[in-house]
Length: 139
Image 1 (cartoon, rainbow, N blue to C red):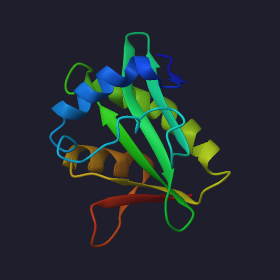
Image 2: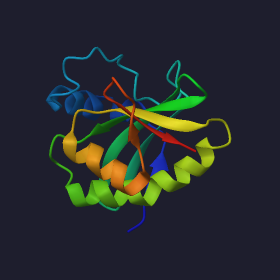
Image 3: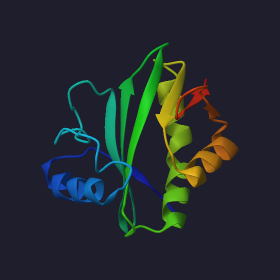
C-alpha cells in the first residue's frame, strides 16, 4: 500500500471540522479553523496522509520546548479502518522522523487513548512524560 503526504487546503476544511466535532477528545478543545491547514500560523509542518481509498488522517507539527516538535493528529470518527491508520502511520512516520531530525531533537504528542499510547510506545518507543498526558520520542 502506498501513501502520500499532501498539503491541506480549503477543500479539506469541512471534513476536518466534522472529524473534530465527532472526536470526544477534541470536540471540547478550541481549535482554530485553520489549525490543520498547511501554512497555518505557528506550525512547522501540516499535511494529510492519503492512500488509494482517500484521506486517512491529518497531522500538524509545531515547534515545542527543548528542541522538540509537538505532533497533533486528527483521525476519522470511524470512516477509516484501524488497519488503514496503522498502515499509514507505519508507512509515513519513519520518513517524517528522518526529516524532523534535521531541525528537532524529538517528537511529543498528547493522548488519552490507551490503544494509541500502547501502539506508539511499542512501535516507535515513545515514552510517557512524567506527570503529564504527553508521550515523547527522543531522536
